[in-house]
Length: 109
Length: 113
Image (cartoon, rainbow over all chains, first blue to last red; front, side, top):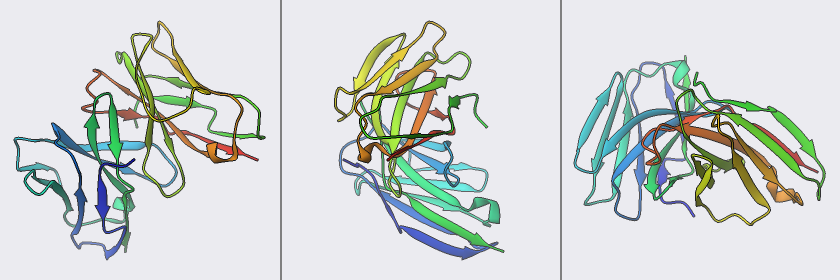
């Protein structure tokens, strides 16, 4: 079963635009993570936000967390063609990370 | 690029066969987890090994088994392969068992015919 659900499923933008993707989850969490996956390859950890944090930045990434709504958003500013990938949110459940189905981002030049 | 390596990168098997996938963890990481990712889906947790012991298991049948060795490398074994086992298998290592940051390998693409 999947805890997180990303929205939208797919997103197409032009280089230089901002990309926002959302994640909703079902149960209480200690933290929420975002990962990126380039086509057919392994996942790369982007950022972790703890349940007592509301916003976190890393380079061009901004993550927000609203525990009352059980939701998170990932904003990528000034997108580049190299940002084309699938993005997954993940929440911890004991020893497992539970991933959503992901948002596929396409950035065209 | 992470320091996690997986082999082989691609594999084709027929239904009923057995397969062994291998993973070399990032240096210093004593925890390894395996995930199955079907096409168009997010990764699903198979199990985790910590210091050579199974430390948690997802909703996968016993024909999925694993090993972790003293050097923290790991194997995933799947017996009696079924068509639905076709997927990308991902190995991930971490410094702690709490999964706060996983380092993934590039995966093994398994096709069962």
